[in-house]
Structure formats: C-alpha cells, structure tokens
Image (cartoon, rainbow, N blue to C red; front, side):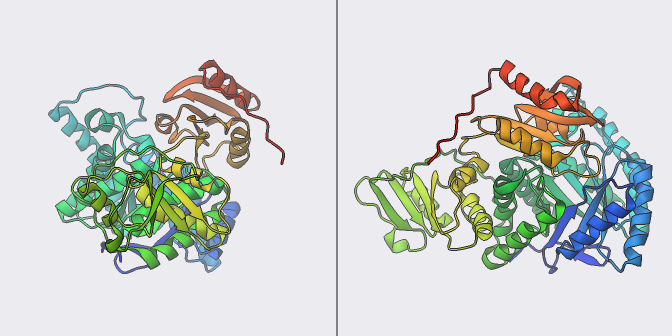
Amino acid sequence: MRWKTSVVKVGHIGIGGDHPIRIQSMTTSNTRDIKATVDQILKLSDHGCDIVRVTVQGKKEAEACGEIKNELIKLGCQTPLVADIHFYPPAALLVADFVDKIRINPGNFADARAIFKKTEYSDEEYAKEILKIEERFFPLIEKCKKRGVAMRIGTNHGSLSDRIMNRYGDTPFGMVESAFEFARIARKYEFHNFVFSMKASNPVVMIDAYRLLVREMIKLGWNYPLHLGVTEAGFGEDGRIKSAVGIGSLLLDGLGDTIRVSLTEDPWKEIDPCKRLIKFAQEKAVLRLPEEQFERTKQKAIISNQLENSITMSGKDQTTWRIEGSPKYILLEECTRKFFEWLKKEKIETPVILKANYDLSEEDMVILASMELGSFLIDGLGSGLLISGPNKTKEFEKNLLQACRLLSFKTDFIACPGCGRTLFDLQEVTKKIKDKTGHIPGLKIAVMGCIVNGPGEMADADFGYVGSKPGKIDLYVGKSCVEKNIDFKDAESRLIDLIKAHGKWVEKLPSVQA
C-alpha cells in the first residue's frame, strides 16, 4: 500500500496516484552525440526503464534534445525524455520545447554555486532573494504549463545554496525548504505538474529528508509525487546495498512513486535493482506515514558471530516477549517495530541482533536484506546482524552495517553514476582508486565526474577527486579545493599523497592465502 499522491503526466506515462512505481535512469553519453544518446535511450527502454533523463548544460545540448526526440519518434520509441538542468535557466527554457519533463535543482537554478560563505540575511533581504528566484523561475513555469511539460523539483544535499545553508543549515530541513521555495512559486501560478526529490549520498540524510518532506506536505494538504534515490551510491554490492537501504526503507513505508538507483556502472545495469526493489515493495510495503518527530537511537555495531549467552525471540509472537535471566544478546527473528517499542517500554537495553535467513539468489538477497534489515538499522533498531543463506557474500553483514552508518571497517566511496557532463572514464577511475585506497577504515572518498555536485558532496567526504575540465582534476579536503587543474595522469598518485599528508593513510595488508 502506498501513500496516495497526485498524478503527474510525463509524456504518456503517469507518476503517482494508482500508477505503478516508475523506473528511471540517465544516459552517460554526450548529449550532443545524437546517435550515442538515442542508442542508450533505446537500450534503457529495452531493459524496462520507463523514463530517461539526459544532461543539458547549455543551449547546444538543449537543441540536441530536439533531434534526439525526433529520432526516438521515428524509431517508434515513446519513452519520455527528461532534461537535467544545473546553473543555466535559459537552457531549461529552450529545452522545454522538446522534452516531456525538466529537472531543476533548487540549489543552483537561481542561486550562485555555493562557496560556503557565512552571510546573515535579514527577513527583508531574504524576501528579495525569493523575488529574484521568482523572476527567473516564472518564464519556465509559464512555458511548462503551455506545453504540458512536467517538472521535478530535485533538491540535492550536495548542492544546497549558501543562502539556504546560512538560514536553515546543511540539513534535511534546509533541503525541504529549498524545494518548497520553488513549489510555492509554482503553486502561486497554479502549476502543479511537478514531483519532489530529496537526494543525498548518505542514506540517513536522504531518508530523514523525505520523511520531513512528507510530514510538511501533509500539514499543508499537499500530496505531490515522490522521486526516490540515493545519489552517488557507487558500484557493485556496496552501491546496491546503499540504494536499497535508502530507497527500500521508504518504499516499505509506502512512500515513493518513481525511483532511480544511481550506480557507477552502465546505466542499463541500474534497471534490475530497481525492478527488485519494486517487486519486494509490492509484496511487503505497509503504509507508515512519518511521525511528527523521530529520534534515532545511536547504536554500537556488533559484528561478532560468536554470540554466546544469547536468547532467540520472535518479533511476531507477543507471547514470547519475556526475558529470563540476563542474556548478553537478543537474537531477533521476524523483526517488528512493535517489539522494539516493547523493549523501550520495559526499559530493556539488551543489544538486539537481527537474525534472518534468505534462501534467495544473490541479487535478491542483497536487495531484500538491505531493504528489510536496513530499514531497522537505519532507525537505530538493532545493533548487529546474523544472516544466513546459500548466496550471502562474505562481508555482506559488515557492508550493510557500514551503509547504515553503524560501522566503518573500510573506505566509504561516494561515486557519481556519470552523465554527459562527466570528464573522465568514471567507472575505470573509481575502480582504480578503490583498489588502491579502499582498505582504510573510517575514510570517505568522493569521486565526481564533474563539478556540479562536487563541492557539496565533499562536505560529507574526507577527500574528493573531481573532474574540473578535460584532462584536469581538482582535489578536495572536505569541502575545500586544495589542488586545482592536476593532469589526469598524475591525479591518483596526488590523491594518495594528500591522504598521507593528512595522516590518514594505512598500509594495505597482504592477502592471506588459504
């Protein structure tokens, strides 16, 4: 069961209402390369992608979208086309002639790129800034209304404006307010054909932002559709776990109308995990609207499988909810939130280990376990995992604990999926950096194909590797750029030198042969 939202039409496809959860992805080709972009859209459509987004940096990319759309029509492909806009409103106005939907980023549509400058705004000054946004945003609203073009008001945690961060903080509340500024303007002109997104690379921030968004919409009597995604999730098992924790937790609560799994892989490889998330959500979702306030209890991770002096309990059978003796751990089968409410009521502080068996394929196991168990761990319900199943990978439990921010046993990578703005081979470079630096506990490294979300995402990372121009890389420490325009061939070694210079380097232990 899902929270009932309004319906937004994107081409011939409806999002929200009683429509199925829609799958989205994004091309990685240069948008000016018409054939390559059309080929990727066709391949995505063949894999089951409902809606495809392309990057539109400027007017040339906007005009290319007209040719792309014409080619798709000639080939009989009805897959709706979405233009991704950052920094340049004139491109949005032009591309509205050709596409079915436009994604705008409230953090950079009218505001300048964030430089993390402290500025205090009076209420009068702040109101003037909102008027500036309205002046730049109104022409696009007018054109979208005229042509029936949909819109996504897509907040990204990594690209909030200085203005928002100074008043509301680099927080979920700041993310929601950033989107609401644009929504209020759209509603002023009776434009309602839009969806919201609240993306972040940190699943905890992402989940909190969407929950806050829904709470605030309910207060206002709004019910716009939700586009769910964990941005820059990375690749492989880690990317799928992080995405399933963030997207899956919300889907299980009955929230979400369209999803995108952002992997640093070929875009069509994002479709399969989307299908699995939707399948399990259809089977297991129970509508659970966000509470007025949510206090997450910070847990200390338990990773040992040698759980002596423990008691096994069922979360579903209330007749067994009694504890005799003083067990060191509770092994909880068939987890329920009511069980944790009972523990709190009885003031029982015994650590809980979530125990589950998944007799599934590896792909299903990764998605379902991350959804089900991750939704508990992310809310501070449980301290560890004891998972069995024929296809469980060796470090899956630790990988899931790390995705839920309970553990840090290796480097955490924030890696974007790539798009037409990407300035280097993102997949190859990310794998090389991970091979050389992926063994360092507690370290976070961001690998970004371009500068769009770079500085903001650096704020959640210790070090950042960002494409700044063709053949050149900028390196970051936190959100500060410390080395600019490094030759691509030297960038990996310079990143390692930077990590060493800041005392974060740990030598990689040799692998032990069986």
